[in-house]
Length: 222
Ligand code: C5P
Image (cartoon, rainbow, N blue to C red; front, side):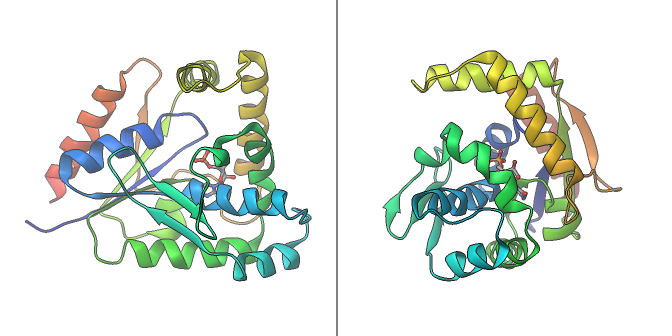
């Protein structure tokens, strides 16, 4: 059976990573969390007092940083310079900075090259903002996953509470709106639906229902 690549794009908190993990596990594919790579660089910038608005400084930081992504059943483990930052890259500080980091052309150029290399052998499920449009424009299946902003904020809040992280619903709602606004309106690779993507609104669907739909679409293409 031939393997395909699956691109899952959409706004923050639409359920991309949870769904992508299930789909990858069902199909025995590799899940690659591209947002984690931008988060890892944002984490390093915060820890080295690097100006996140200054592109040249970030590129130089990226060139001198090792960011490793290890796929696994529980999601991707993320290491920066051999330090496990899987949990830390989900902090509110990193979340608040990551859209500024990911808006720089030079940063995206390097990240995209790495992501394309990781998906070269096919059999990969990548989630992000520009997978179907820029990273894998030839992906055999492209999904654009959306949900209402209220539902997305609720889900993030529950996820934080479940993981013992501090969480405040109204703050999350505002943060998601700000991040969407930045990700959709940036000049380079903004979040847009690829013309050949299948849009799925997950507001009233369970994660399993969304994953089932995507697996069914994938099996039609394998
Ligand atoms: O998916 P996640 O919320 O972890 O992504 C964090 C941030 O990384 C996004 O808000 C966006 O700014 C950036 N990102 C991106 N392109 C991707 C994945 C994430 O610009 N492919």
